Image 1 (cartoon, rainbow, N blue to C red):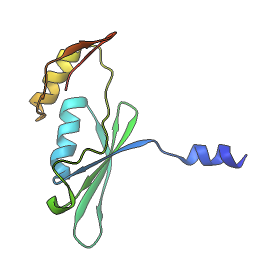
Image 2: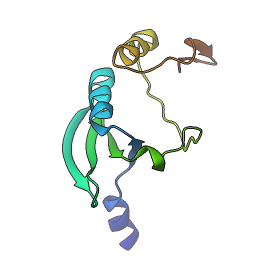
Image 3: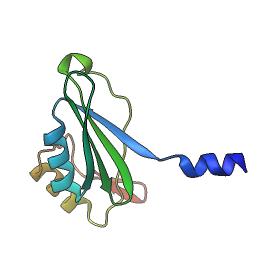
Image 4: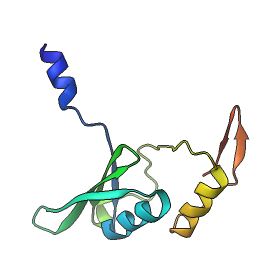
Length: 113
């Protein structure tokens, strides 16, 4: 019983760290239709944080000072399954993303970065 209760309390989420939370929130809204449902300030220095729902995925945006983020550090990645890869890529680029590659065939799917 204890394990069942604990598993119901877990919230699967994707943490996103950025130097500008407002821009990140705007990007996820424009590119993927995410809906923001809360926002708060963390700590003594006003670090903004926001929570969003992205098609059922819980996304948390955390604002950090540039000194806390390393340009060459990648902590993970996530992907979206969409019906039209080219259209999704176009929306992301229009919202401010930078395409680092073309949409390519990969096994049974099409991928873009």
